[in-house]
Structures are given as structure tokens and as C-alpha cells.
Length: 565
Image (cartoon, rainbow, N blue to C red; front, side, top):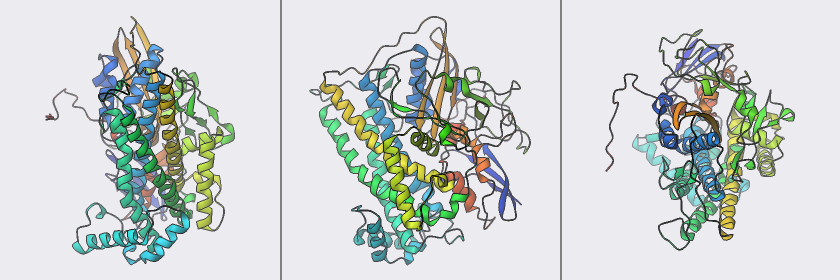
């Protein structure tokens, strides 16, 4: 039997998934991006200093990450140093954006794959609150809060207008949580709406607006620091940021991380499904010096899930990363018969055709690392940080596994992370690590300013002739890298290899499945008319197809005009 889910909803962009189901399990799978990314062609011949403004329009959600990586790519080509204050401000934007993104992904994009909100109506609010209080000291776990949220859900149901809850598979046989746990998750779903908003205010304060921040520049940031001027980054604004950091830390540590541990333990059978590709690629992030040679969070490559064989990626000039990345278009709707190409030599010439199971079937290219498929994302990053001995990661992961083991009634091994539910676990752990890092970066910025260093920008100088550079960032969805070739101060070639390209890519040059496809094989399907299990595994990656592909009229015509008032 063939199942086609088109589009996958509660993601960014347009993704189609096809599965062959045999004996109640997925036997084969295809992942297809349904839009074309033409941003690389838009950038050709433009000033490299402007690239970050264009690239953050790749997506409406992941705007910040593309801006950051774009300026890093140009700075790398120029061999530039970036002032310490600029690094700390960028790091605070990155970490705040990551916390915001991870909260939204679990509660508002994927939790409803596991949590039955209609079942929550049958819960005893007092018992649900007592359960929550037994797991953490989060002050939002009062009986009054649980009654309030349950009444709100009843009002939705009685009105017959479920709104954002209208398309859930309520009552599906794969939904297994007790009513009280469903109510617990629903309460925190509502609270998370506010906390993700608060995290994003930090991005807005430092970036001048969000989405699409305005404060970056090749060479630093456009945030002058003067504690005596209201038109700059003042102590008043910095302490406003500190208050937000303290506000959201409690929710991340005592609600989000605990919820994922408890819900994951009650779906322990899902640690058997969804592993897929177990080559894991991540990069270090949060630079602590002006050249990008020291980082607050490590990253690297783990082959075949063996963390003992972890190989670190060390700095912004790391040849091991620079030389390992290629992209294939053998199964993507692009011209090209040269085999997999390095991004510096990458080509983006569309050639659309039919959906062919054994031919071309996606607008997403197929990246490889030293010719192997690799999974990217929080799971890859957490495993790398554990392998590197990163203490904050080890502490939060140990706490997570202790809570999950307590709920499950037996210890949860590290190997359980190689799964659909493991990707959610890793994202919760990484969010807790980011939360601590955000506070640390704020303290580093304040300490550096206390020394009398207020520099935030170094002017870039472009040489004659051709130069090449790459920038990377461990984005919420995984490794994001931009690659640029600059000739006489103009962009000659530009390629973006994004997290959802790594994970959502079709079969590669050797016809090997990508991470989405491989992770679906073996998944159970209880009801082919309602393939909830397919959605669970795909959502665990947090797809962003708007980043992986993009739209452009090849004839150069105007698609839409927007007037900003």
C-alpha cells in the first residue's frame, strides 16, 4: 500500500512524504521538497556585505541563523577578526533564538502528535497537578492553573471550533497517555506560548526587530555600546535582557525538560523506531575569541553512532569540515551530471520533471560528509558534546535520563537516544544547555565592557582577485553552512547547505537514503488512513523546507510586491 502525505503540516515550508507499507510497517520511503530554492542565483554579482540581508529571507522562521552564517562566511573569506563584544551579542541572539525555537517545536509543532487534548477533558485536575508537582517544583503546576486550562479546552470543544487543535488525530490508537498526563502537557502548552515569546524579545532588543534582525554587519554588529546614551545598548536594556533570561530559565529547566522526559518514558516503545542514519554531524558554536578558535559549545562528527570515535571540528578554518561537504543532484530536479559537487563549485540550475521513485523526485539536494549521509540536529549536537566531555550537557542529560527512568520504572540507556523520541529528548537537553549559555554570554559581555572595551565593529577590506570562505552555525535544526566565492569584491558563487537539506534530502549519488527516509523504514502504521506514526518521526527532526528550498520565477518576473507603512 502506498501512503502519500502532502503536505506535512505543522512545519515550515512544503514537504511531501511517500511510504510503501507492508504488514503494518513502512517498507520504503521517499522525501520530497516541493519548492525550488533560488536564493543563490539572486545573490550572484551582489556586494558580499549585503548577502546576510538577502539570505535571512530564505525563511520566515529561521531568519536569524542565515544572517549569522552569511556574515561568518564573508568574514572567513577575508580572514577577519570580530570584536569580542560583537561575538557575545551574536551569541546571545543565537542562544535566545534557539531557546525560542525549541520551545515552539515541542509544544506547538509536535507535542500534539503524542498528546490527546480531547482526552485531557476526562482528567482529574487535582490528580494531574499532584503528578506534575511530584516531577518538579515549577510554580505553574498549581491546581488552579490546571482547572483553568481544562475549562478553556472544554469551551473550545463545546463551541465546535477547535481552532489550532482542529486537525489532530484525537482518539488515534497510537495515542497512549493517561488523561492526567494529557492535561499536564496541555497546561504547559498554554504557558509555553508566553515563554517562547519572552525568549524572542531578547532577539528583538539586540537585533532591533525579529524576525529578520537588523543589527548585523560583516565585521561585527551595529550595536554601539554607551551606558550614558539612550540611543545605544545601555545598562537599562542589558538588565531588561537579564530579567527575561531569569524568567524563562525556570520554565525550560522545570517544565520543558521534565515534560519531555515524562512523556518520552510513557512512549518508551518509540525508542525502537526512527533511528535511520546514525552518522551524526555537528559544529562548535558560541565563539569566545575574536578569531573563532575557542567555543562555549563543541561539535564534530560521530560515525555509526559510536561516540568513542568522535572527531572534533575545531575552528572557523577547520579543513576537515571544509573539505568534507558535497551535494548531489542525481535525484533532485536540477541540471548536472558531474557527480556530487563541493559547495564552492555548486550549481543551482532547475530542471523540473515528474515524481520518479527511481529518478528525480525533490527540489532538495542530497548532502554528504566524506561521501556518507549524515543526520544533523540537536541529537547530533548533544552526542558530540557528551563525547567532548561538555559538563553542562552531561549534567542536563543525566537529569533527563533520571527523570525518564523514574517514570518508566527502569533505567534509560544512552542508546535510547538513537530514535524518534530520542530526538525530542536531545532537543530538550540542548535547550537547557542553551539557557545556561545565554546567561553566561550576558555575564561575559558585561565583564568585557567593565574592562573599558566597547568595540563592536571592524571594517572589512576586500582584496582584488578571487577569495573563498565558509561560515557555519549549529542552528536549532542542526548544521547550517554558507559558502561563498568572491571575485573583485562581488559574489561569484554562493551556496547554502542547510539542516533540512541534510535531513530531508533524497537518495544521494550512490542511491543511499537520506535521514528522513531511512528513519521511516520499520515504523509501525496502525491506521493507513491516519498515518500519525509517519508524522511523529518526521516532526521529530523539526523540518524547515522553506530553508531547504525556495521559490523564484526563472523568467525573472515579479511574484509579489509588499508595501511597508
